[in-house]
Length: 249
Image 1: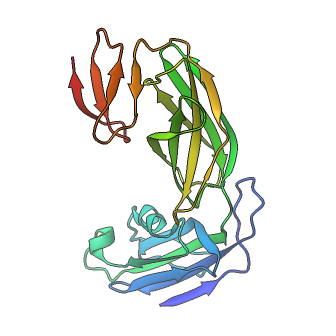
Image 2: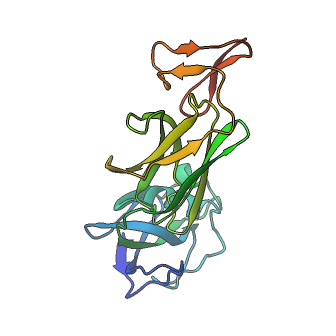
Image 3: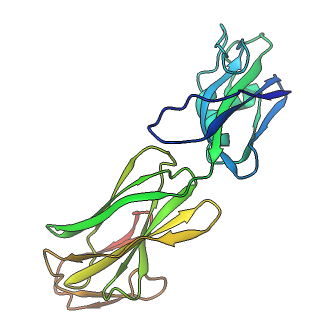
């Protein structure tokens, strides 16, 4: 296996990044491992080809034989990680050209781990839902957003999980809550990194457009849920991924 650096990288996202490229090549049935310097993570894959690629680092070219899924497979193994390994074989990429001895060429860009930038977080009542919206940048090291709600702005419970796009550029998210239980609802985001560390956003208060006709106590719930003032309609039990588990009429 050959691994080598380019002098600089071209990475135009409108962000001020100190980034470099790391390249590697292996023959078929070998494993390519790329490791960025300590404190760095891979932020993009600028070239990946399993087949008969040519050229040198910084000027790789696709050959007559090329697996079209090369980019996505390599990106899944590297982006957001300090190190990653990819087996160069037909079991991983498929066989783009039977009977031809293949190789894997990769060029990936790495940069210092940048903290998540929460550009905005707001919410508003729309008919029978409270709609939260937020915008981020530099979320390559962020795993997910846990949406939390409260009826008093002090004690919060998780009501949903939104996976990140894991991109450096601007990202937009929306989450709707139609199970609010009081006239005013409070929300915050728990922003969880891939290493398990987390931070909280500011708290957003929403005065509900329609006051719920009943109260939901202890939501979300693991064992027992209490409803007050339920007169008609139906009940849906939904997990934190938004899947309906049961429905009662």
